[in-house]
Image 1 (cartoon, rainbow, N blue to C red):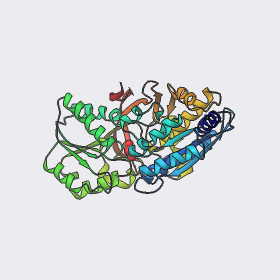
Image 2: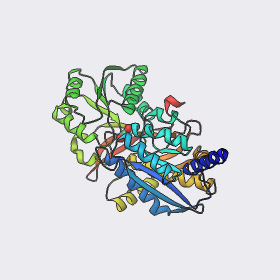
Image 3: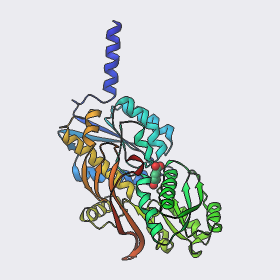
Image 4: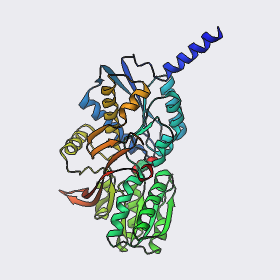
Length: 385
Ligand code: DHB
């Protein structure tokens, strides 16, 4: 009796964990900040998932795909609760989304216990994929996209830099990656400033950066926050101080770049995606995205679009077996042509290996764009080599 109870308990758990791949429907739990200060990330990814479904249909390898969208409002406790409900009640076979690093980290124990992929579309702290073999990433990592900028700065007459980053995982990754490469190349970081994630006020930090008289300020802020940063940058007169602004491409996010106006002109960033990336695949992507969603896609959207691609490609490889270990094995090593350029999912680290581009904000045909001017091909996360 006891044995039978135990067995049926284990069976129920296995079912809850989504291992019953004989089902006809593959459910994807998509958890995004659709409200709150990081809602732009949710909106961008949701728009990309809808574009993918409209272009590729909702059947793959004989399975019907169902995406269940949940709004976590950008709060980790909510993300964790939603992930739990999606696994236990909805029996999803993939957990996807995760607009911020703390939200991705909060989900790790649940995906790991359920033995299903946690497909990170947005969050970009290097260490997230180290937490569990069930975490796999469609987007990028901060160290990966920062290193080429540090090398560019050292080669382009920038000697002294003040770093100014949002004070949590990705910001600290960006600060460390910039400093280590820039100092190795002969530069000097004269101050490291960290701004709170919630309700940031950049003014006092910009004042300190201004007073330190560096050649450049290196900045990381999460997607959507670039507008506030730029506004305060002008209010402090930093645009007229002769101090250059460089950063990761999060600050000149394609979603908000046009609204920044001429102050953004000439800002140099490094990144894995620009809406101005000159390829046929990207032109089609930007046009398709705009037609469906009415806005320009940004890098967050591309993480969502390629995340969907990874699920579809994996299901084709497994002939529709959606059990967690089969899906993960099939996602590892995938190579594809993304709107950003060529991408390979590193089978060892579960992070994308991708080109990193140097870009400069320019006005082209009346709109502001991050125009790419140099490429470092096939960059790995330097912390995951
Ligand atoms: C993260 C969030 C962002 O909006 C971004 O641009 C980069 C990283 C994060 O929380 O990991």
